[in-house]
Length: 493
Image (spheres, rainbow, N blue to C red):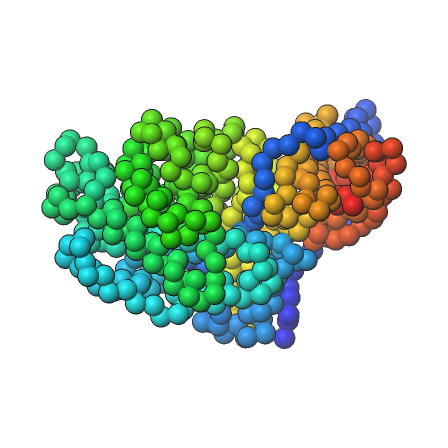
């Protein structure tokens, strides 16, 4: 039985005389690039790369469709081991409806009380639709795992639409009562079911109780979120709307409640569908006076890309969900140029880290038994297949570990992208992406580090973060080549 199946290797052969030699291809082209790294100019602290097992998909990874116990361990190790996939973020789904049929079947509140006064008969099954097992197994391979517990919706009884689906607002925020000319998109077709009751504290307590159950399992939740894509109403699954003003109305209750129970736990805002949409929510939140009611700005990459730093009051930002979601399984590094390929993901991450000071990047699902490309690892019975997207993550996060700080790095060539990260132990990760169809000869000048050696790890159509050479750093300088359509991470130590 296969223990690991990596991305398909593609070997190109060209018959003599059918294509120009590389020397002719590059005739008249400058194939030299100068890179400078300045460790004294510092930017954001990194949290890491990650994925999710939300909506019951974690159960795929733990045997629902036949993956053996041994391969369950191997898949989790491939994702979260520092020496393989390098992921360090896990996003868990806080379920909201125990009768749901979409896979997200567990909630700690099976029956809602009739009023916010309760009683709230919470119950815990110790499994949380396989997310407890995923968390514990991932922690085995990465003890410093950053676990983000995030809700798609409050329980329906706490919302003005009376259901976890069809968006709606948490009762108690502006617009939720339907009598002030404001409110959610869904209110236009349904009267508010809040009946002038305020469920904000009840929802905050509900979220904190979920964290307490994980603590009971010996699992630390690093960050808590109340929203998922609040600018979007999918109608058919758990969702809840909010603009920035309404987010302020709830976060002013959640933030002190969460901090009282878990002072070191971070609170997020607000997992919008895109970077532009997140900026709008953050702007309105600040206008309402709530710019200090969260610790991390969280956003998705579906509807808009990051182009500039986020408008926070100094808080970091984290991309917490994205995948293609529309295509068939794509394991390639760089074959078609399709957005699910590993090479494209390397560039997406570069742009977020460099243009928007983003501290981490989270793929949608970790693994899934599927024929689509929503997951980093495709499961098929007892076999599994790794997408090159994971090697893009690994090319960053095997080397730029949590707590590392991005420092200034510049390339004088448009199609050669470079970033650099200084780890807490003084080592430096320098990922370089060559978007050209020919190699570049690179000269690197490094200041602000005592490193004496650079070890190179190559990812392209034939290599998966493969060590390919070492270079001596002399006089703060070294030279190396960067292969075409490749990502090459230099680990300076």
